[in-house]
Length: 464
Ligand code: FAD
Ligand code: NAI
Image (cartoon, rainbow, N blue to C red; front, side, top):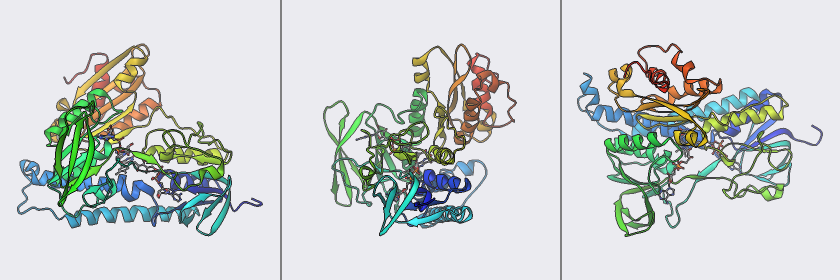
């Protein structure tokens, strides 16, 4: 160790950073993790994955009770109502328990938790407050923050971002969501279920960019049926505060006549951008690419030896599980152990109801690369979905025509987020569609729809 204070200093305690720190300590390296937040867990645990899922779960139950869906199952609830304070309370409680859980794991694994904002002094020294720490390895895991919409300053009351949209104290009558991506659809769903009239304004001609074309179309149809309105191929050119609300000016993306749209609350959800401001990357000899990301090689080495980067601050999907797996890989690489991460098999899930999930290539991407076969199966024909009154959705398997190897799996189903793990594991093992088709699946389960879609690749599904 000689002149070094630490073997590893991790900057940022989100899913990338805290996992990297724990694994580095497990590998016997003297490790500390610094974060400027009061609690550990980064975006995901504090203002992202976890609180949004807490509100999605609670609001889904509310809607099931309020819409009469439970009554139709024979579950009669008299005098039901919304206690938004209690709903927020359970969200905050879950966040508290999970962030404290990370603090417990730090203590258990002897990771030192440093509180403060970190900036590079040079390639192996970092300033945190009035302290300077020298580390043999520095892992940058500073994550990302909400991308601003030009000329629309977030005030956290009427014009909100994903963090303040989780905290609304009353249900807005009219919520306009700018951006039909993952955040817009998840948080839009929360407030629609609780009673808001929700309009999503999306620049592109379809929601959920990056996902399979059929899945995007079907998701749009299902969410529309639930009562969400969509203004596609539309851009927001201005947002003005007016009275207690706001008025948005909209124009067709391709140009044309402007219209206005009134809202009580406007949620800006047009993407996220990497956190590197104030980090002093230039002091360390580092720079960012055109998208503001830190470029890394396959092992997460930056251009400067001894400095590594993972998670939302590097290129790739901005997902917590991707950040976590990169955290493990970088800590094992630093310790000289074998590490691997298959960038082709990173599942993504949108936690609407039903859930929307995918892994691997979309049909469009796969078709552009060569001959493919596609099998689909509707959830309407799945016995468990039928039993649970969940008719919406489908499963699609995309396989290589010659080898039959599965290239991608896409699905909309109530439990798609859980089902997609099977597809990811099959793809990780290089499965063919036949491998999935001949795997015995328990009955009655939603997962049988994946088996049927795999059978459909050869045109031989049984239950349709
Ligand atoms: P982060 O979690 O952003 O953590 C970085 C940390 O570093 C932060 O705490 C930050 O304060 C700190 N930091 C930054 N700069 C410094 C500095 N200079 N010094 C000290 N500390 C610093 N992903 C999913 O996979 N599933 C989901 O369901 C999901 N839901 C989401 C819902 C919302 C509303 C949002 C906003 C995001 C969601 N995401 C989800 C994305 C997910 O949160 C991110 O991909 C993930 O948190 C990235 O992890 P990270 O470790 O790279 O960075
Ligand atoms: P996103 O990239 O998913 O979607 C942003 C959308 O806004 C796009 O459809 C884009 O075309 C549109 N857009 C951009 N500028 C616009 C404009 N001026 N007017 C109208 N539309 C515009 O970004 P989002 O939803 O903000 O999420 C950020 C990241 O957080 C995502 O990369 C996602 O991976 C992650 N996340 C993941 C979740 C999950 O895994 N379940 C949940 C929430 C966030």
